[in-house]
Length: 79
Image (tube, rainbow, N blue to C red):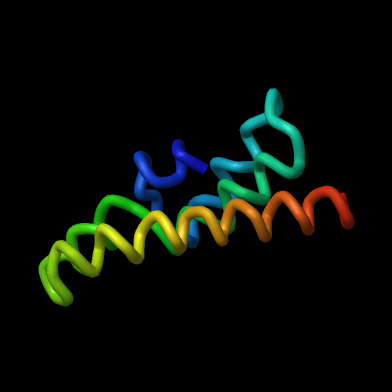
C-alpha cells in the first residue's frame, strides 16, 4: 500500500505493475490496486492545496487505513 502511494501510478497502469509483483500475496496486490487510486502523492498535494493542510492531514490517513482494511478483509475472504 505504501508503494502505491509513493509510485503514484495512473490507475490504468497499476494493474500491469501489480501483475508483475510475483513475490507478493494476492491480498498485497489487492491493497496496491485499491490504495493507489485513492491515496497518492498527487492527490495529497491536490487535497492540501484545495481544502487546506489540516483537511489533508485528517483525510489521507483515514482513507489509507480504510482502504487497507477493506483490502485485507476482502483479500482474506475472497482470495
